[in-house]
Image (cartoon, rainbow, N blue to C red; front, side, top):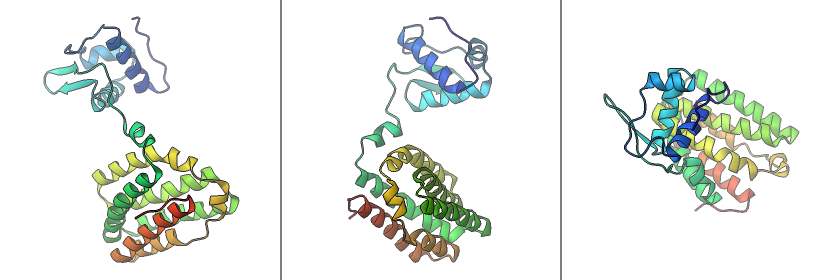
Length: 228
């Protein structure tokens, strides 16, 4: 295969695609060690950060294994399913059940650890959300809604849990947005998000837990599902 210097857009994705092609055609076989980082930079015409990002993704998907102090080896020709691919097959009720578990834990931590800056960020998102509701703007509503929940995750001040939640949100956002209609947005009249924000602001852990569950049960009822 002829290797091309990659374009500037989506550099890591292009490197990933070319490395997968090289493996698929047999240039690199399972068990082979890939060229060193510097050689890969020259081969693809990109910087070290791009190569490291590409290797991180390929490692997470099971294509390569990074052996520190030794090198990077081809592990498999087949990529493991991504979180997005797995969630794309999940039932909406199952996604909301997962949200309940994640968001309850995150919100309770936020109620214990939030500061004034965190609360201000949450309230800003709620203002944008309310504006989208008035306009019947599905995309703006979804963006502001997810931004609010990510602001809550930031207030929890647990980077590991926050990272897991952000990956989850990025994976399910297209699915949940697709299930949201203009009518759903225009009928959005509850104050559950405001109540959740208020409970977090005053450090009310029990109130926060109730608000998260009420919010998700209400959302599921609106789309014809139910949460146990």
